[in-house]
Length: 430
Image 1 (cartoon, rainbow, N blue to C red):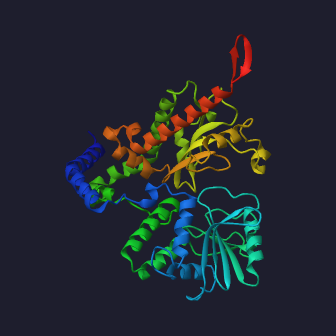
Image 2 (image 1 turned 30 degrees about the horizontal axis):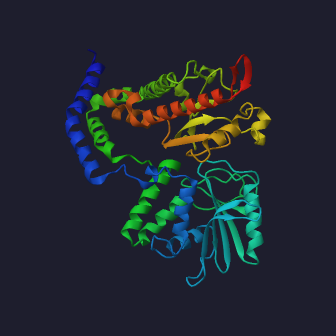
Image 3 (image 1 turned 180 degrees about the horizontal axis):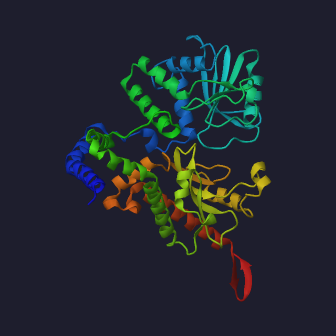
């Protein structure tokens, strides 16, 4: 073997010899620390659940037991004077407006009325923020009012009437004359921690902070169970003869990542074969396009135009999304470019799933996601955790495959239920 091959061999041997000890250490971390346990991830938190959590935190009589702490910090963050502690404060969830819309949270005190619209991934409705601002102004009756848009997307309309509050990462102002920006919501929660007296509330907040960080970025949340393995690799860097071996692994990272993501796509296609034959990728793309921030979409020639299954990055490549893509042709920007799904399929899918879906957008009538992007860290973790190195057997991959198979089967069933059939030689609709 060459000198470089010997260095690689030595590095792999050094790590391999440590594996039994490291495995025992990580089992101890799991047993006594449970670093992967997070109530928000377990409950697959959506906008409605998160709105309820935030509303409770901002309610001085909330179950957190910390009185005005969170409300005062939030008010100051958006430039409002916190209400006096003897003020009558009303916190309302899904507050209905005069035109039948619903503001996620409203907070009313003697001198202030505050509306909060929350967006995780859903698109804004037409004139939504403008309508909320008009409603708050109508209700104010001389009181100061503000509308906070807690989201990582740019407000559509009412720009000068809205205070943008990002989740975790500060967002540069595109137009300082028009836009008003508050500090990230994550910072408000972090600033509250030193003042929190209840142990259970502190633990709950720390879970919330981890969830926000994982979903919207800001801090690199390294799972504690991987730390010992990473430390062993780093320790081996003290041997300068192994520097080149480590460098080769780093140079190969992109190719390895793409190979692993492609194997996920293969598992998806194998699963879909159990439903029907002929699934193809749009534009013959390989699944590794996900690592470049692109969507990987699948269709059958027998399906309506622009009805597809797919995997996609979401929220700045911080989430791994999957589901059914069927763009809503009633939306102007979709109609303009002719990307809408054929016929009445968007409406049929909305009726088919109703509330039985994790999320939806104007492009995806059924949408779910996992935290983290289609990146090297995800690929490496899959390889590390997969039983015997079989990517298709990893629980997160199995969830994606099984879900897409079920969705494909429902679409096939819907197609068959509406296709012409024959009876006594006559064509009839089922």
